[in-house]
Amino acid sequence: MTSLPLISVDPDARGRRPAMPPRHLADLDLPGRQALVTELGEPAFRAKQVSNHYFGRLVRDPAQMTDLPAATRERLAGSLLPALLTPVRELACDDGATRKALWRLHDGSLVESVLMGYPDRVTVCISSQAGCGMACPFCATGQAGLTRNLSTAEIVDQAVYLAGVAASGAVAGSPPRLSHVVFMGMGEPLANYSRVVGAIRRLVAPAPEGLGLSQRHITVSTVGLVPAIRRLASEELSVTLALSLHAPDDELRDELVPVNQRWKVSEVLDAVWDYAATTGRRVSIEYAMIKDVNDQPWRADLLGRLLAGKLAHVNLIPLNPTPGSRWDASPKPVEREFVRRLRDAGVSTTVRDTRGREIDGACGQLAAAEDRDTDPPCEATA
Ligand code: SF4
Image (cartoon, rainbow, N blue to C red):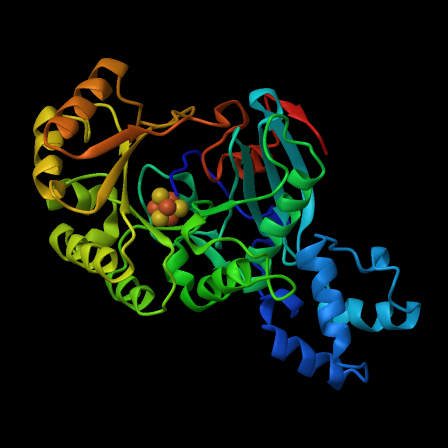
C-alpha cells in the first residue's frame, strides 16, 4: 500500500482507454473451466489437466504442457492461457532473499510484485489495481490516480509466477513453497472487490482448482472502505485484514488518507473490530511513521487508547523516503518512543522490516524508476 515517488503507466498507453485483459483460466473456478473446455470441443478432463499444470506445477506456458496433444495445446492456449504479464524487469536484493518483478500488462499499464524469502516462509506482495484512486498524498501510486482494476487472473498470475521462482530454489535460505500472500502492492484491494475475492478463492482452493494456500496466510490491506470490510466479513473467508490507519485522529487522517473524509476513524475501527469478531482473526493496524506528521507521543497515546484490549497488532512502517518528497521517515528514537508508548498501553506492536529498500521496495517505486528511465540500484535478473 505505501509507496512514494511518481508512478505512471507506460507513456505509450496514455490517452488510450484502459481495457481489461482476455479471459484466463484463473478467472474461472473449476466448473467454469470445464464448461469452457467443453465449449471448445475438448473433453472436460482437460480443464483439470491444464489446471494441474498451472496451479500444481506452476507451469504458465502452454508450450511446456507436453502431455497435451499439440492441437489441444494450441486451442487451449488462446482461450485459457493468454499471456497476461510481460516481464519488464526483475531485481534481486537482500542477498537474493527479496526479488521484485515489474510487469507490463496487455494495455501497457505497469504493475509490480515482490517476493520475500524468510527462513520459515516465502511471501509475495501483489498488486490489485494499476495505479490507485485513493489519493493518499504520501504515496506515489496515489498521486498518479487509478488506471484500471486488475482482473482476477492478472492478480493470481503474479503469485503463480513468483511461486514458480521460489520453487526453482532462487530464494536462498527459504523454503521452496510459496506460503503467504499479502495484497499490499499497488492499489486498494477492496476497491476491486469482486476480482480480489475471486483471486483469494483461487489462491486458497486446493490444487488443481487453486494454489492451496492457507486462508490464514492471506492478508488483505485496506485504507478502510467500510461497506467492503463488512462484506468481506460475510464471505466465510478467514483472511487477515490489515487496516492502513496512519493517524488516530480524524483531523490528520482526513489529510493522510482522504477516504477518511467519507468513513471516520471510529467507523472504520468499528468495522474492523466486527471483522475480527466474525473471523476470529487479529487485525493488523498499519501505521507509516512520518517525521513530524503523525509520530508525536500524544498520537501514540491516543492510538494506544483506541486499540487497547482489541484483537489487534500494530505494524509501524518506517516511511521509505524518496527524492523530492516532502515526507520523511521518523528518526529512530522517535520511532522507539512510539513503540514504547503503544506497548505500555498493552498494544502488541512491531516495526516492519524494510525489505527491498535498495530496489525501491515500496509499491510503485520500481514502476516509477522504469518510467523515469533510471537505473535500478540492484542487480537486474531480467
Ligand atoms: S491506498 Fe492507494 S494511494 Fe493510498 S497508500 Fe495505498 S496504493 Fe497508495
